[in-house]
Amino acid sequence: MDKIIRATAADGFVKMAVVTARDTVERARAVHDCSPTAAAALGRTLCAASLLGDAMKEDKGSLTIRINGGGPIGSVVAVSDSGGNVRGYVENPFVELPLRSDGKLNVGGAVGRDGMVTVSRDIGLKEPYIGSTALVSGEIAEDMTAYLTESEQVPSACALGVLVGTDRSIKAAGGFIVQLMPGADSALIDKLEENIFMMDQLTTILDEDGAEAVFEQVLKGLEHHIVGEKEIEYRCYCSHDRVKDALRSIGREELGHIAEEGKDISVSCQFCDRVYSFTPDEIASLAGEEPA
Image 1: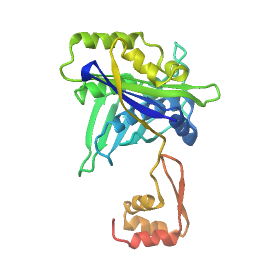
Image 2 (image 1 turned 180 degrees about the vertical axis):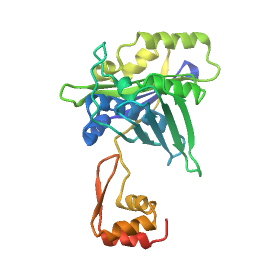
Image 3 (image 1 turned 90 degrees about the vertical axis):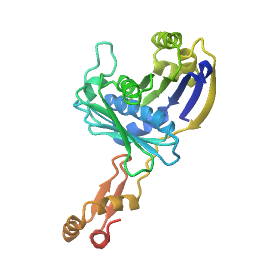
Image 4 (image 1 turned 60 degrees about the horizontal axis):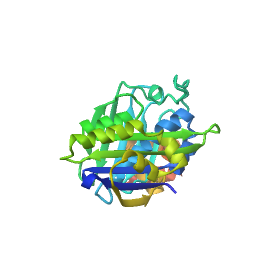
């Protein structure tokens, strides 16, 4: 079962969260029939969204990460609820690029670097809080590190990884965010930087040893305490009523034209590919309703 684990270290000056998300990312890959490169890009973004969403204090809040770097994959979108459960999609799930010179999937080439990472937090107010920063590499983790440090003014390090098997299934997926609280001294910063530089490949750790080993390598030499753990999953909140609300938003006139065509219409959820069908009579009824 996928989960998020949170810990503190160095008398509270360090906060760290690790997410294990193999099943979650495999579900996303299967739903969207992703290529290995698209699965890696979407999986990394889902992991980042899960970590940030779970950190929200609002019980019914949601967080959306949208990345568009001008690359062939198009936009990468991941949405998390306040419990770390996620859903997402990429515009071009079939993108294929040659491997990088080091043999790894070319996520940065698929995403591109000419664009922004935008994070939107909806906490129930009239307008969501939106922050954005320029993409650094398109590899997702570096871009999220820059976002957290620049936009949210919190010194942070983020690592994200997805291991795709030869059969295209997800063998390991997850990530971590480690953050320094105000007052942390330079020696602590140096220690964390050294640990992260020396650590094994993230997906290897997750595949072979699990989340606790990630804490042990990143926080090596620092006593840490687990402060929370919860299960997460790929979860879509679409429903017939929500799709009806979306249809109402296109306006009475357009709905009337659709109804006059006399054909059933089908609407597919972009997050889970579930299909909702509506008859001409249902569309006509929506056209006659007051906007929600």
